Image (cartoon, rainbow, N blue to C red; front, side):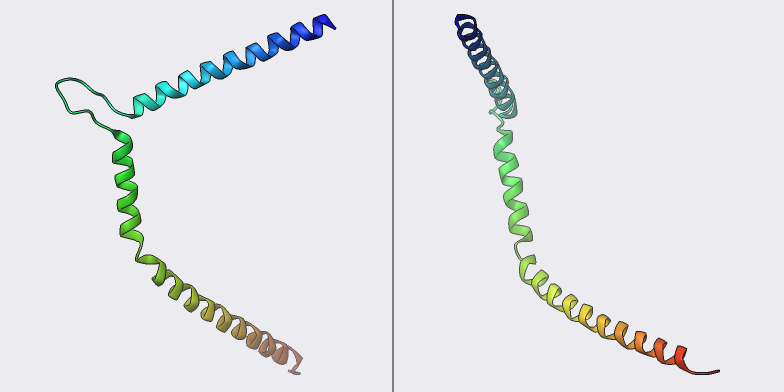
Length: 101
């Protein structure tokens, strides 16, 4: 029983150590994304540039939603028309194949 308790404590400790190491690694990566900072240059924040770019894409593509809705309705009508044509062609082929030469 004591052995299982010691193994459990060691396992939990290893889990917390691994968690701490991964959190430190994640923090280092996120700080690297923040951009270089020196006393000679204004600090660059890459995350804000990414946010600005994503916002620009969102604004520039925002007007597409109504157009896509109209296009979807038009394509639905085309699909229905093609289904009718397919049915008519199938009937025509069946009629032609039934005729005697």
